[in-house]
Length: 101
Image 1 (cartoon, one colour):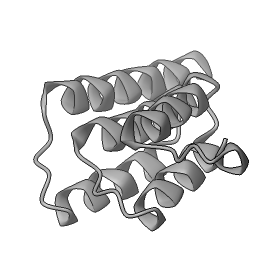
Image 2: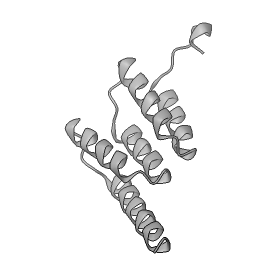
Image 3: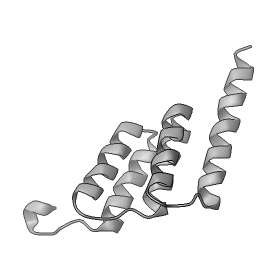
Image 4: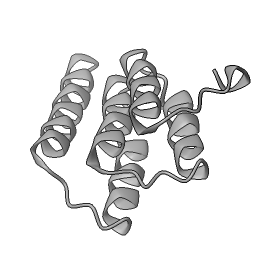
C-alpha cells in the first residue's frame, strides 16, 4: 500500500486490528495498534476496544487487564463496548474453568 504512495489512515489501521482480533491474534493486534501510534495517530476507544476484543477471543484475561490500564492511562473512559467485552471475557474464562473441574 505504502509502496503505491497510499498512506494508511486511522480507518485502515482499525480495520487491520479488527482482522487480528477476529483471528484471536493478540500479538498482531498489538503490533498494528503500535504501528498506528507510531504513524502519528492518536487512538480513540475503537482501536483500544478492538485489542480488548482480541484478548477476549484469545481468553487472555491478564493481557485484557493490561490493555484496559493502557486505555485508562490514555484518558479514554471505558464505554459500553469495552465493558461488554470485559464481561464476555470473564464469563468465557469462568465457563472454561468450570468445565475443567
